[in-house]
Image (cartoon, rainbow, N blue to C red):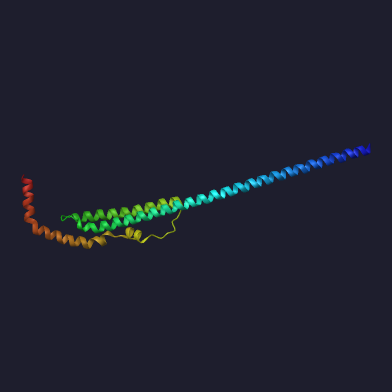
Length: 179
């Protein structure tokens, strides 16, 4: 009886050992499968992340190019405004109004640039580029310094023109209002 008990015990322990070994193999294989799956998922995520970073860099470059184009356009408009302002000034006290509107428009150009830079910063964080020369020109432009010499010249010409044409102006005005 002792020997049959011993045989049964050995058989039971053998089965238990085999079951434990098979469970260990199954668990180990399951871990290996999970590790392989996670490795594949990690590779896939790295590829997607790289593609996303490339796309973000492309968008960042396009926004940067758009900002530079905006600044160039505003710079060209500001220079054109400055160049046209004296020529378009009206002889009768219109010079100050034209100069004021010119200053207002150029200030608006600078505000447009600042607004666009804030938009760009909201998308990508701080911009690590220094302001361009064109941007410095537009935002640092003091219209009074540029236009005052021209305003003075046109003011003198306006007075001269009024003095020379006073009689004709009066007769034209009388004629206009009498009719």
